[in-house]
Length: 326
Image 1 (cartoon, rainbow, N blue to C red):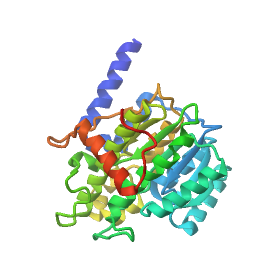
Image 2 (image 1 turned 180 degrees about the vertical axis):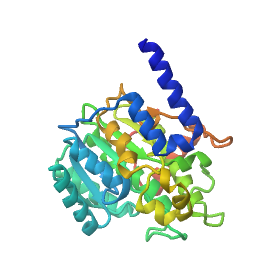
Image 3 (image 1 turned 90 degrees about the vertical axis):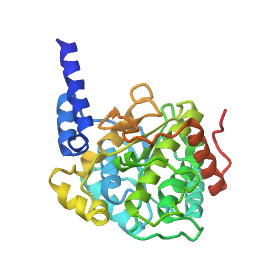
Image 4 (image 1 turned 120 degrees about the vertical axis):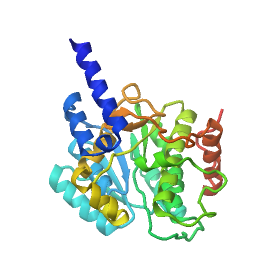
């Protein structure tokens, strides 16, 4: 009887996944939570860092982690907004997160933050690279990079590289790249990584960087051999201020079935406590299960492409790899 029930559960889950709209929306989350019977996560003793933790899904992740007993390191660009979120999370959960300032679009800021964190001697089991932007117009950083690419790709790459030695000290270390369902629409162009040769289209540029995050997660995991485990995920379609500001039409049409930020955060919280056996690195997760990385023809990259992107990010950030290719 148990095997029949298990097969029925897998069929329902797969049907939701194939449907995309029900799978990515609050419908999919609600059904999966019910059929799998997810319980409460406990993360006592785990130290987890979340970037972009002052708002949206990042804040929901931080609150979920704190509520589960983890030591939470909130990394925010805006300290005032970060302090407001930290106080609210402490009041709600009874656990007070640590707050750090870092602008992921600035390599100098990432280096300074990582240096300070490593010098503090704080342990770190999990890094969740959640911070991301989708500006309405093309912008360049002071260091000469397109803002979306700098924030969503180069910053997380460099932060991961710099913190990997500390995460590697954990018995069950993990890095999570927060991607997006939008990455399904595109492959990644190594010839034009910042899409300088085309007219600026915010969703397209954002999706391009989100595909890059999945590629980098896979390449990091290959180079670490899965220890620490490095994986990627997407939160489904969640109602956040970022979505309503950047995609007002999508938000208006899909609003009734968008997930809450807490539902979007659920898989990241679960991954923070899952072992490498329960949730291996090198996979792409949503709703606590591995999901396909490709849905559209022509979007699949090669192992050589992934290694090429990794080396390109190393060159752009001036970073000598903490984990090298075989």
